[in-house]
Image (cartoon, rainbow, N blue to C red; front, top):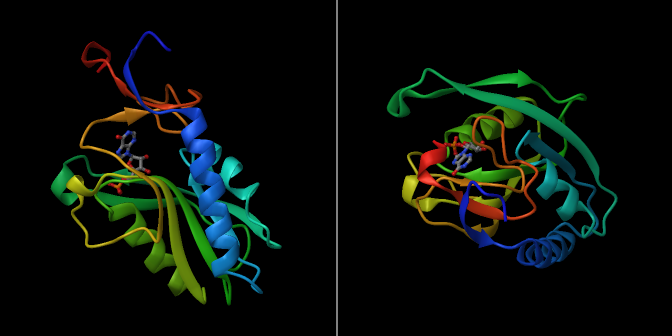
Length: 176
Ligand code: IMP
């Protein structure tokens, strides 16, 4: 275990097993369709790579980059830094997220994708932190619900570090 990690919340094995279950469920729900998986950079990358191996459909993938700005939590806003490479018109989009926290990012991105003409937008998130929700929004597929603690690993960062850890863990307080 990395020296900065206080405890492991979710092991690599658990993440892989859950990704397999989610991939199977998505394959059933989208049977006959060709969904576009859209990962939100950078946190979704390891989860997207794991999940898509288990989706037995003709999918395509794309990425968007969005960032929060404005500092304070109550008025935080979201900016789109990288749009999709292609038009979303008529697409069944599955947004892939690392964690749903306040829900603000998802709300902005979902509205944006519908404005671009998506037929449907659903969300799959590795983690869900419902205690922190500000916007009334829910992921359609959730890997794990986590408590209100700052977590890192499997794509999630603190100051761009720890994304490469193969598990999700809680940082030691003296690392903040
Ligand atoms: P939201 O818009 O508040 O739902 O924020 C979602 C984004 O905040 C996620 O995609 C993460 O990048 C980041 N985030 C929220 N909670 C955590 C955490 O516990 N660890 C690392 N990143 C987090």
